[in-house]
Length: 343
Image (cartoon, rainbow, N blue to C red; front, top):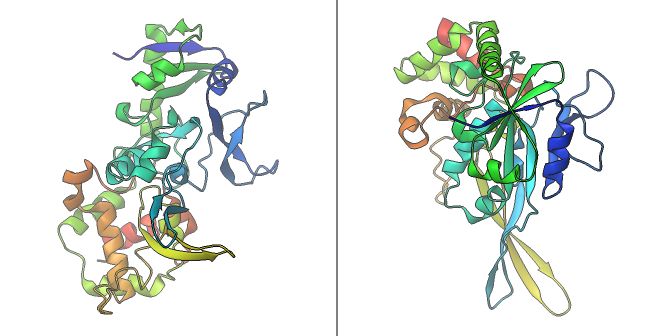
């Protein structure tokens, strides 16, 4: 049984956490109500409200940097360049993005660069109480409530200004040390699950997603179908950049020279399995030289049962960002609809 508390507002919790951490939160890019939302450091007594809107970018770059040095070679020795981040809090992470971080934790379990950042990050999740646009987290076990093993603390909006605070980890308990808190009542706990149940029932049915996953795992989709989708893939990497579970990367050396020394820095950067060169081998053999092959591979990595034993779940957390960004109209809703209807 997790410890639960009642908060009249979030300000005191934010101020307390800010004593020992940098605080990052999702904020609008402008006062325009139609503006996009993004992660930004907040503080100095100016605490923005938690927003319901899902940011276009997930928080994966806080741990898996878009570009980072791995080591430097000065001609004689190699020096590893590990990140040394200040302890920080991601405040108000949606359940789908928390599940994606949990997925990345498994993929990067032995990666010292990822783990150096991950160990400094405290995750404060927030339950969703209304479905988001294009979202289907409830179909892939990623929401709308925060799962127990994906966060340190969870916030739940009860009514008006009151919030429930749920402690899920030892790190979350430690972060609250010294903060006077009021226990939540059984009625508050009941209200939380009532709100979540109502949210789950409010999602559109999206039956075609389940039918598409079924056909994909029955290998009932023809190569001709994938080739048709491949024609629509522009190779822009919008989907793989925004997907919170995508983790393809490559490395390259960057040379720098001064009057005294020349050195080479090996840099890691985000790559995309939808690029033509991603799987090209040194012999120039390419097992995915056609766009249709790459599109097929992408969707199998998101919904194939083959990856469940390793990660405990599918590689899609139902955020719907690929649908929102794909200029070729082959995001998850479009693809699964066509698989269910035509493949």
